Amino acid sequence: MKTKKLHTATHSSCSFSDTTLQEIKLYGADRCHKTQYYKRFLEDLNLNYEFLDVEMNETNAEALRNLYENRKLNFPTITIGCKKLRNPSDTDLKKWIKKLL
Image 1 (cartoon, rainbow, N blue to C red):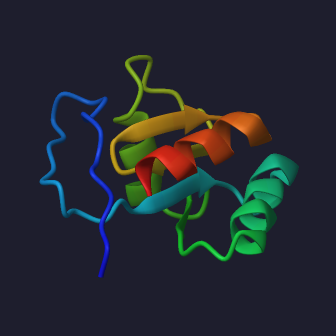
Image 2 (cartoon, rainbow, N blue to C red; image 1 turned 180 degrees about the vertical axis):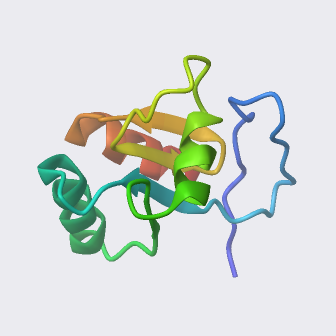
């Protein structure tokens, strides 16, 4: 199995070894059209991801608040490992997917 070398974490509490697989998480809400867009985007790329509904689950909401200094529910937010992307463009999301996965 070939692994890619991972880049330095962007969050101070994160650290990984060179063989750690990056996990994709999508924080959002089912009612949000942008969240639905990112779900389709990730699925079209055949990527495994975890959807974390921040309106239906307070634990998910708190996890999202912890990503931001202002503690707001800034969704949709996608994390790839420790890289946080808030409402990214397709180009930026593809760039980070390629870079981190």
